[in-house]
Image 1: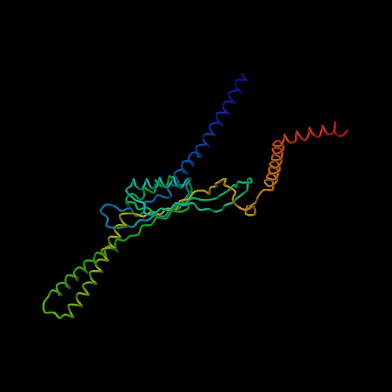
Image 2: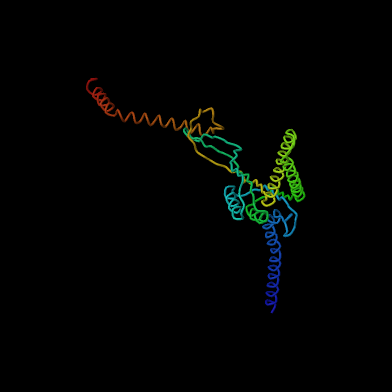
Amino acid sequence: MKTIVKLSVTLLVIMTLLFSCKKGEAPAEDAALESSTKVTDVISSSAAIEKKGDNQKFIRTADLKFKVKNVPQSTYAIENATNKFGGYVTYTNLQSIISDQIETKISQDSILETTKFSVENNITIRVPNTKLDTLIKVISKQIAFLDYRLIKADDVSMQMMTNQLTQKRKENHQKRLEKAIDTKGRKLNDITIAESDLENQKKQNDSSKIENISLQDQVNFSTIKLQIYQPESLKLEKIANTKDKSDYHQTNIGIEILDALKNGWYMLKEIIVFIFNIWVILLIGTIGFIVYKKYLHK
């Protein structure tokens, strides 16, 4: 009976410990889940999204800098996503930047070139305003570490309205000038001044039109500027030894001793090969010496 009681108590303790361990693991799993979505939540933004029927006009821009695992692969993924959402890449500059380069002699005719470098890319993207947040969420999947994220929404509604009113005013003035010029009986000097004024009015009117077109384009297509980079990489490459001995960086003394031993062995090998090449002469000389010592010397 006592044995059964002891076993029951032991089993109860073990089950309690297992239950408590599972409860302790749950917050850790929740924390991991939160960290996985943290980057997406941070860089996404619904700032100044235009609503239907709203007269507000916003120029939305985004600037991001972040680290990725592989810059070329992330670049291709971002470019494909941009095309998918109806945008286009206006600038990309993929390059490798060398931070350090060391040459170490590893043999008589070879050098080990060690290169430390980082790969980065600066990208400028134009994407439809309604797809800005969607594209940013897709880009967030490439982020290993976020340096910063800046999203701006500039309200240009009043500026565009001012340009439109200015444009109408210039058009009315332009019509009156054209009518005055066409009126007969005016002096030549007055006509010349009026035509010059008309030309200036047309230029100002065109400038207002062009500015509004530019603003509307920036409203319709948001601009995203990305700076992406990856951890510093190391490249080892064996190259031919074409430099003077004094040019090598930190040559190991063991390499020098090994080279000396190799050179000595090459010399010994050449001597042995030379001896075997003249074995006939040596044989004849040896026989002659023996005959001389045995017969001629007496």
